[in-house]
Image 1 (cartoon, one colour):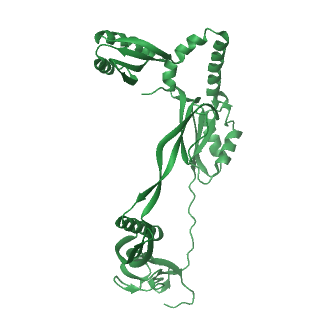
Image 2: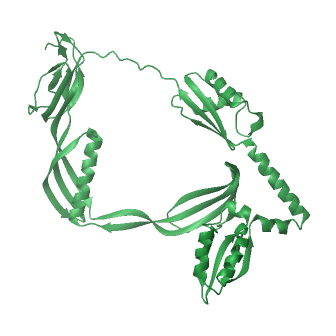
Image 3: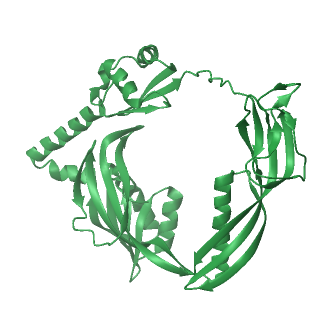
Length: 393
């Protein structure tokens, strides 16, 4: 468990526990559902821990049962801050204004998100919603009823079959279902299926047209596989033809490869944010890392199921370092062959299957492994070619 915005609102204390059976005390806290965190053992049968203010008084009977004593080291959170602030009128007034500001900010629409659109630009959808009164920084009580707004936007936006509008906290979501248009039917001219490379046919299925080759036939690039003729007339040939094709690769793989990793060193910056505005409070100073990556974590203040547009943002700057990894010649060979296979699949389709591989030539010099490899691949070998009108069968 760690401190969060919710813990700050409820308040928590840091306790110094000494004497007695400390282990039994921790076990009893777990049994009673008393959450403790940042437990730190200390010399002389002592330990420090954090506990919520609401559980502080429930802890006293457990201290008596385990013969432990406690001392409050720190008091943290809004209840203690309120006691200190209320002693000063101006600070008390500031707190009231702060609470009012949160209330008013939570009554505004801060963001409008569009989902589900493919062909209709999000800007056009947001513009139509703006004309109906839905836009960032609009008061939520001024918005039309969601059902009425959904029907209006559906009528207004051409190419939609349904538009839904939902409000969650300070965020409005417009979900669009676009109308399905019938696909344009292309009027294809008669055509043959021909081989796109030299191959040995392993499978042929002619759905339309006349098969010109059979299984185990050797074909040249450009040879007709399924002719676009059927019942004495030209047709658009359809079918599937697979064959064994040979691909030759020249592979070059280094024995030392470089990779980027996170070293574990980091710098954390803390911000208090209001909507789209953030004020840095911690982590000042220049970034001393030569290379780095940044991860951002938002922790908004929540009330019931709503997230308020105010909270704490942590920005973790992680150092990135380059390391060198040595490979054996066998590992370099395996890496190079695996990369070549990925390239074969990318160029010839995911249904391509590498049946065999043969290293024709191999040498290691200048810190690299050089190979010439022949791959036997079963793949789709058919491609469409239009039939010239005066072409005979």
